[in-house]
Length: 635
Image 1 (cartoon, one colour):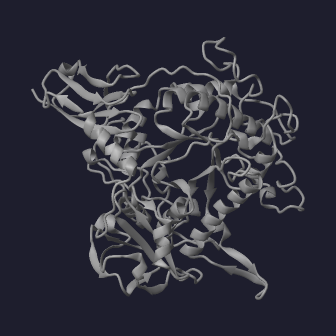
Image 2: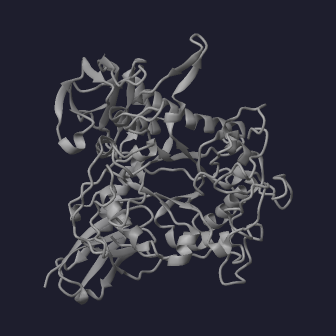
Image 3: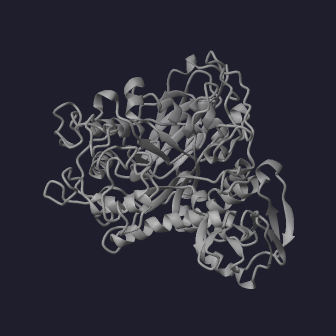
């Protein structure tokens, strides 16, 4: 991979997310992301990323992850240095990870606000000096005010990690609540719809909600000044009432009111709403006819509840004008979601329900404009027998502790001992079969699916389709369902289809079925056909033509002690070049100008005489394309 960074002159922005045209469109693919977690000393972030994304160089297939959600707390980077994760991010990029989400948190001890708010008996968990000016015109060597500790932390992060992260999530679960006020309806004492959350309610902040809005404002101004294409998102929230409080208040520390110094409410300072959803808590409703609860503990009930959580958030945004009427519409991502594979108490929990759920949830995301999805979690923290609550049974892998390839002395022994859960197999199958396919609402409409069948149509860039179908579950604590489906003539589907089951990623098995009388169960299947090709879009044609005209080569190749990178530009462009070895470690960043003129260019690769013989990978990047080239060194 070829990558290097260039200094960019930074200036303060003069817009917010309330202004038309300033919530960037997201044109990237839907990516299958995960939260890596911590599983003891036998794993590090490199080896965890290998089992998440897959790395053929170490013979690991992975689970199909294409994006990571990664924390970089200030207390961590302040101790280890702000460059501590750059090598890891470079490795992630060699595995194909992209558009990552970075969530910020945890001030260093020296920068923490030790004030007590609301009489809760605990100090704030946020930063001191947040209400000092964000900018000082470079008086201290940076564009931001170094005495505004949070602004400085964000500035240092974004200048180093902007190339790797698309989404910047401001705190994890800022609305985490033990009081129960978050759930209350308007009219009930202490509800958050009509009362601002108490600092004591906000367990992860212990500070007024105005302080959270201040974090959003500082984040928006600083990050956008460095990278206008970045997305600022509220941090993995779970309660619509908290969102409403953010949208109805400013960052005025006195009372959240509008003043000349605090002119805008919280919605002006984020592009994306990140939410968390654990549907197991909401799979029942009160039924007056039986004077008791009715339960819907099955995979379709859980999937629908997941989307209900997103819809509730969207309704709050709509109420405040964030639907392209008054203000630009905001994007959605989900950064934590799952159900357990073991039953605890009254909550859903079975291996089959979880396996079916993950496929349905991933389909539902794309049907409902959830741009990215990060499952909780990569691995489980306990064995099935050991687990005592649902969060311990939500991994794509079984218990990982002690199974990594890192010995107690920090030496790699090359032995990976991870074992898939069935959910992990289903997740990988869905990623393998639907990556770079987009949900096609029009084509789905032609399927005319009855109410008893779920699914949709997904289309790739050249017109190939994959159809994901299943019989909807309706019985509490049961994954038994069946249906027969025939593709209607209007769908224009081939008479014979390729069928792949939920476990295709490990079996590799494909069968053929007719497009009439297709037998369905509660477990989704993937059907594909290639009879109908459509022309490339103009954008796709332009990209392929640009790659052809680029004429990127490395010569000589194989090489011994010297080689050069050659390319031709048809218009001025910024270029990034970097070289990695076969293990994904950064070998060399080639110094290049930030802007190249039209024409042919050649850059020598010096220092190769010190590199061992073997295979290396070079990445060439411009604003519109990325290309990988293999370089072989032989002596």
